[in-house]
Amino acid sequence: MGETKKKIKFIINPRSGTRDKFYIESFLIQYIDHRQISYEFCFTEYAGHGVELAKDAAMKNYDAVIAIGGDGTVNEVAKALVNSNTALGIIPNGSGNGLARYLKIPLTLKRAIDVINKFYVTEIDTATINGLFFVSIAGLGFDALVAENFAKTRIRGLYSYARIVLENFFKYKPKKYIFQIEDKTIIRNAMMVTFANSNQFGFNSVIAPTARINDGLIDLCIIKKIPFIEAPILSILLFLKRIDVSKHIEIIKTKEVVIKQSRKRVAHVDGDPVILEKDIHVKVHPLNLKVIVNPSWKGKYAVSEKE
Image (cartoon, rainbow, N blue to C red; front, side, top):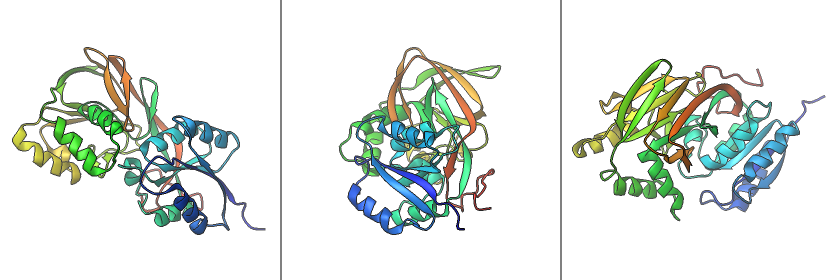
């Protein structure tokens, strides 16, 4: 007797990316391995719908739920699958695609489907900020402002992202933050504060070069005000995955951190803007999410279901 087929639900966000949803569906039908996988398609219809669809699949013991969209879609699906036996899969179809890039999921449809066909599963950490789930990146300060403005743009992509950064960077004033990390208190005036579970915002802009998504730690990245003349250098370091060598960034690895600010402000959670209270609590939740990754991804704990 042959092996039982993997049962998979594809959740497609029709509003993310530029690819037509019916084009994606026909591509999936063409290239999915029908010998090993049985599947169904669902389309999100409103914010939070991905959570409902994925939770239903986990309750029915599906082997995997594949998020087809951007980091927001991935966030919705992932939060429904934590502490379950149902794995998250990603076919990137958003703008930045930060988590997909970190896990070496190809951005082309056919190659991303090949990763699903191989069904190589590992476990990764997730995190919460004031109880709100995130799997990749959350942040305060300037990057939260960028996320807020980016969410309002009609045209997505790196150009829009870069334009928002340039329009706001030099007029943004640093804010005072008080950090409680274990038994240590530090005070910083920071341009932005990033909580990195993976290493990047998206677009291969790597804010935490040594972050590992399965080490039980968050990389707390504190970025100070950057002099005008040095900003281009910092941008280059960001895309060269070397920003940690800059004297303007401080990175602290921690399991948990409490931050106090003068008032509540906008934050971002996996790229989506939210308003949080002035007291912030960030905590990592180790190895509580199964994920289908590219076999070339060198995660410390990666194991293959086929081994």
